[in-house]
Length: 236
Image 1 (cartoon, rainbow, N blue to C red):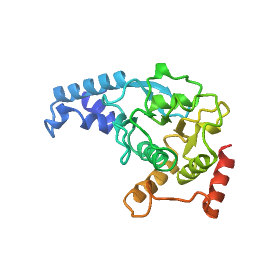
Image 2 (tube, rainbow, N blue to C red):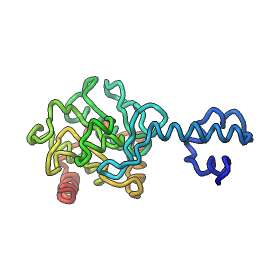
Image 3 (cartoon, rainbow, N blue to C red):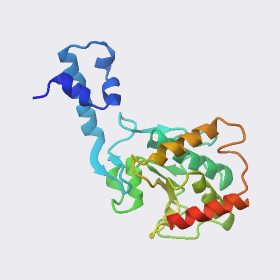
Image 4 (cartoon, rainbow, N blue to C red):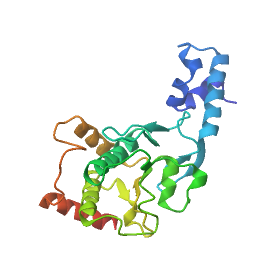
């Protein structure tokens, strides 16, 4: 049988270090370690499903309750917050939302839907990615699932340019066999090396004048347009 200390070591660091019992002492007793383990296991059972969404990320039952999905801000927009998976996913999808706001159409509170409970999504469709916190819907009532042609040509150009920023790590639901033009989602697995690389690029832009969301960009610049067309062909 594994000791409490061994089990504690095997737990994800974020769960162990988040425990009040652990924080209370740098050298906890076996009883405290057992309490840390129990609380972490209870939290995992409450949050985790053990089942992946379509893109391979684990779906979670709740948001803002100790898992990986929390309500996060989208700076520069009037949105109250987006329930989204923290880390690289947050960086990438918030970039999509901000550029949409600045370049396609101004967003209002309630226009963006992030995490949805696993029971509210269709598991075989990309919308299931919302249950893992790796997708957002922008104005789903305006761009209903199954319909195409919701955007004007100039808006389509902007969408292609946004996706080009993200080098194929994010996919637009408008390109899927059953389209959902409101949906943008992570299109790679949690272990894909591009995820960190592209997220770091976006983070650097966010702190560099003249880069990132809010900067006026001409998607018809030859190099940008060519890159967007290559990516669209890859993701077709």
